[in-house]
Length: 131
Image (cartoon, rainbow, N blue to C red; front, side):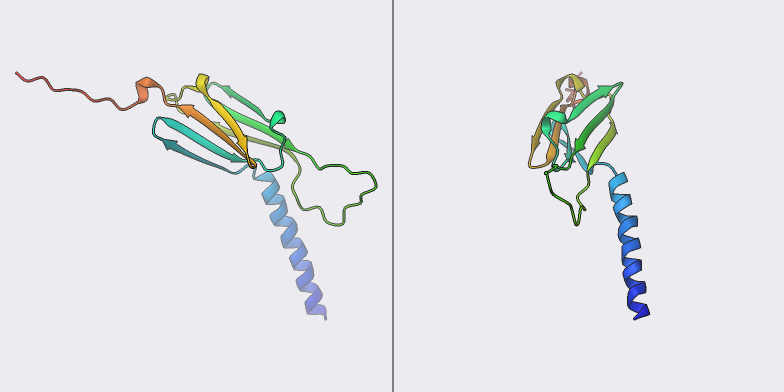
């Protein structure tokens, strides 16, 4: 019996450690280039899109959001594992991106940011003149 209780305690401790690590990790993202557009997809499940704050300052993109627990009168949670609270994520952007034309969409818990590549950063072809 003692061994079984030790495992339960170990499970509880492990769950607390990983829960803390997950909460402090910030919003998960994917970033990639799709043709002439740089795309960032950020997971923000359960967030009100109206409360998402996006800013760019000196090529540093900052996204802030908050996930709130819906308060219900007379409800006492037995288990509350879904993360709540403020989330902030910063991404350092290249000088070759046109942040003035950044577009943002929120769908199915994912914030999608599309930033066009500037004309000067796009690949160019040059013709060779014959002599």
